[in-house]
Length: 261
Image (cartoon, rainbow, N blue to C red; front, side, top):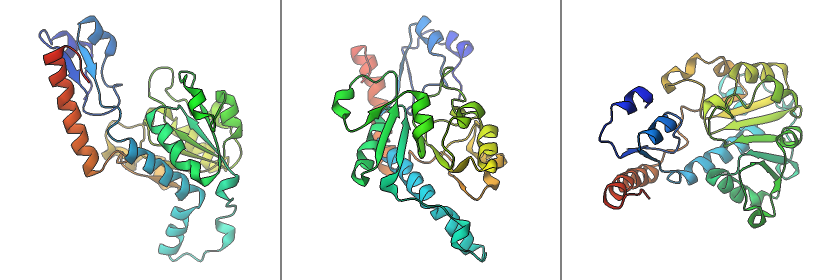
């Protein structure tokens, strides 16, 4: 649900808007601030699940597991020519767009694969702790990455960060993974990039639709080298329990101590 200025203006006694999740892009933060309402979220409840899912997409796309599965089950006569080229993972460069909690877990889990990890995040400062990750400009990441995994929050600055112009700067045969927000990618630009062969494939847990029930409407679902899941990368029973507890604790702490967790 969208919590906009009109709704917020009617919340005369509200102290906190507790987001049951990570992203707060559905809440008018400026209107809430002006009304003296605190916004809370739970940024860490599904770090393990989403980072696992991103890595599953990276491996599945790069090894072309999804395409091979489709070829086998459709009784198509397959040959190596239909899946070439596949490169050794340790020879690749993985580019992480943003370096927040989830992206850092992706980097930590990928470290054992001995590949080259780069990231672009102009707001991240603790670079010394991650001296095994190379921090680069956005253009450098686009130019150098064999796989781009997107972990950027969605806002006016990042809307359609991946578009026809940024795709032109990418390496031929790049894979794109998105487990963050659908609005970060211009889907028409992505579709055209894949059809042209510029982009080798994609793993997407999010599309630019308000409701996951509409995902089948996307032209991307027609492409065999694109795997799409209905925004489920956050899910495990453990994550659900942690989310429930921490959301309730945010409200309790705000009402009892004047500040959420």
